[in-house]
Length: 388
Figure 1 (cartoon, rainbow, N blue to C red):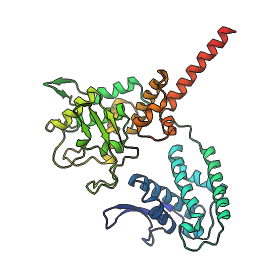
Figure 2: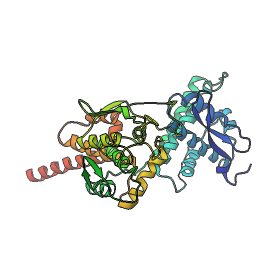
Figure 3: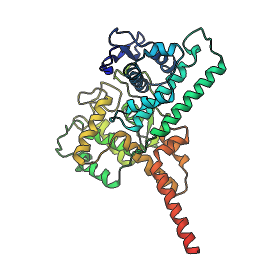
Figure 4: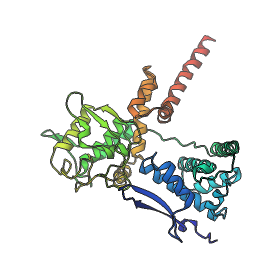
């Protein structure tokens, strides 16, 4: 078996189905045939439960698993799994090391490990992929439990100490100095010549403030349509799930992973949004080509990669490292701090973030919770010493 470069032995591609759905596929380069067990799991277990972005991430994790099996374990993974075998703790630790490879963050490695754990757990039950099951339910449960314990043990060892730090007020000011307007003339914001095309300056600013003030994900920003903005009565923006939209030809298709919700708009956001949708180009958006709110200079819906290309040069010019995701963290860390300080409780954040469980709130509010806890501890210590 040739193991010189495992990354060249497997490849991912996008297959367009007759229904118009785009399915990420993992193939063996030598034969051009999809991997057996991995793609059966994707097409039967994952395909109808997740959106394209998550599905694509799953396929990328499987690619690394197949590469590891070929290069390090030197096994045919499909044959190995069909025979009812799975990885032991030593192999799982080796896999985690292989995934990290000195290049990936702990957080990214953990996501891939979680995907692989779910896949291997599914494989241990033959009734998921064959009509013939000669293993008892008790044996299946015992083996799945052992696999789960082994992965949990590995996760504890690999546990990430990384935490996304929210932007400070000073850092936000530095960014706005780069992308913000220099004034207002005849009710319209005026921008300086900062090397960015005048056709996208207001768009970039609106996306930044939406993400900062409302904590919107990149996918939520890109899935917004003009009709989702309500200007009358109580100004608000509606976050709507539009999975597998036949009119959305972007690959990957942006996705709304959270619950649908309506969020109130500040006067500042309302002003910029109204200008962006109402003004003619170059200040406003190109109209008539798509209902999606954020568009390119030619009026096409903005892609995920194009959205990422917005913040990178801004980060470079301002000297502030940030991303759409860190803006979401900044928003909810700030909201959490305020909620804890005024006694409102973190439950207030559930509908704002589109979450159903408090663990999501705690993930995004980790810094605020820690700061609040330490402040409470300090008060307790000061009171204890003064009373002593």
